[in-house]
Image (cartoon, rainbow, N blue to C red; front, side, top):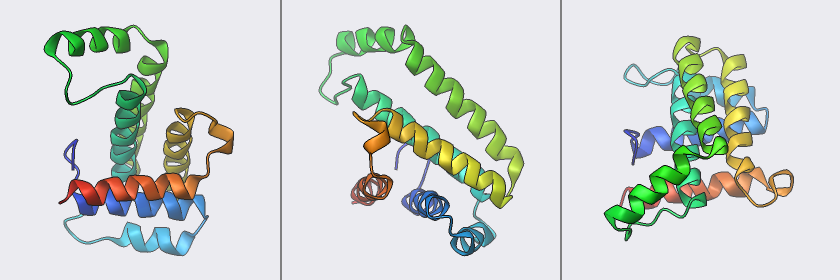
Length: 148
């Protein structure tokens, strides 16, 4: 998985996003309980949100693996000058800082999760009409395919 997340971490974060969306406190509590080597759920959801937003922004700006160095430099300049991209970066840094101090406070996990979902939806063509569960399923498929 990119951005330092393992497949298991991505799947745990996605499960937390889904549980928050469904308002399933029991599932969130189970995910928050985690194991001794797992990071606090709020921090993980925020980290995953950063990864998801970065991925979606790259796609929105047309990033391709076949780009030349010159094309990448042009794309970097375009992203750097775009207020939406800068605001997205600010949002993800803020969520990551907040997630890092929240531990497993389920109320904070829910707010971060809903903010991440809203950010994911914001880059789709019709954010208010984007169904969340299929969107999360797409990210789950992506995480699983990244492991093979």
